[in-house]
Length: 248
Image (cartoon, rainbow, N blue to C red):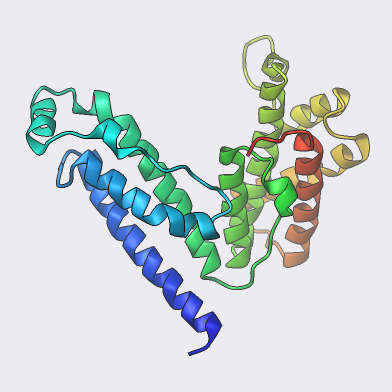
């Protein structure tokens, strides 16, 4: 068995274990309460070291001692209707991290590895933007070009919004009736504030166009070269928007 095949088998095993843990967690979030909070956190910590080796988003270990309860104590909180008030947020956080890991593993298990953005740019993005970039990347790798175009449009719009939020200027993105302005106007605002240079801004209409076509038209077929051009633009814009952001 070759090295590549061994790695693929290891990834499939990890994916299967993660799916099982997530299934148990979602059952308990839905009120089944098969496992304790501590057991769910232990499952998360068990996978953490393995996933941090292969995922581009790294998470920290959760101190299980903080959430230590006996089964009878948990059952009492459930009966009182206040269990989720105390522990729902930590279980939801774990569930969200499982979702990110499943996406990472899906991308690793399929087709060629194509990075939309270099690691030095990727690590500067916030986790919500990273997740959208990863989804777009997964769509591209599976040749779901229409879905990829829609996700790239979302990357662009959400990244511009985040930049305005980081600069405490989100009010600039709403009109007098407090409605958010459309993407064309957001791009223009970003250009005026020099978040995006004019040359790049003038090309971004292509990403919006293909994203709109992907979402609303069944008559037009998108091609690899259409998406490749959009990917190059996204990489440049993300680097420009977040070049001085050192936070992951």
